[in-house]
Image (tube, rainbow, N blue to C red; front, side, top):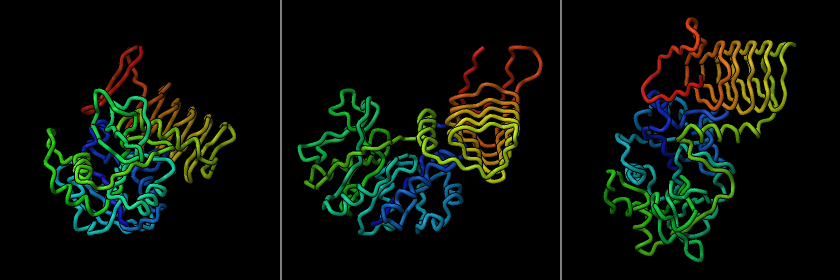
Length: 355
């Protein structure tokens, strides 16, 4: 069995970070989202993986390489334009051959892995199996309607009046029958080949399409609040591990990871948090559910429930919370007229200022 991982797309909901970086490489607890998916695929016993990449393909290739660090054999498949999930299957035909495969959206975060899904598909004799989870607001998701034996009767994208509370998670299993389906369907109103249309094609022609219910934690990490929540979930499970340098004036409590080369001076670290390699934290407070990336510098700053990416610095600012700060960003207190904010902000950014 093979795996097809989708790591293209524009990542519009995480701009401006995704103007210059793949959304699948935004880190959760200092590890890219994509890595969690690749590890889940490996742990399910799959070793041959095709990764569909788009505009940020070079960055994804540099981050994943040949896959050997994950014990995987990786092949890259270039998608010139984001033309839909079914289009990814279409262009991956040569890689997939006539083998069954798992399709995994690279920006999805799933606690518990996919081993049960893969085993169920291997033994069930299905032509498609779709991962589902119960959600509070199904009108914002693709929604599945099930028959009495768990078979999928219909799929509907963001319905005004959902027929169930079962949302489609970004993990699918397919037999080679799906290749005929993706060739048969036509682009949707938004100009994409929709995987839901391909699944409908299979259902209408009597193919066995089954559901598999997720009982653990799942998130699509396309929005800021989802990234922060996934970061929280992972950090709640970290084991304390201080391998950097922490002076006697500092206070550490809870689940705190300080990676090698990091320096903490005269600061308070309240876990769960991760401080990346070669970061420096001086006279600062880092509160729960915060990931500080490698090479970051905090000086006389306060931050909690946030993600700070590699090489950024925060000086003289308090208090930052519920924030995602990109790579090589400088955040500092402005001198001059009181209550005046001095900003240089890129396109599609969002800033909230409280007087």
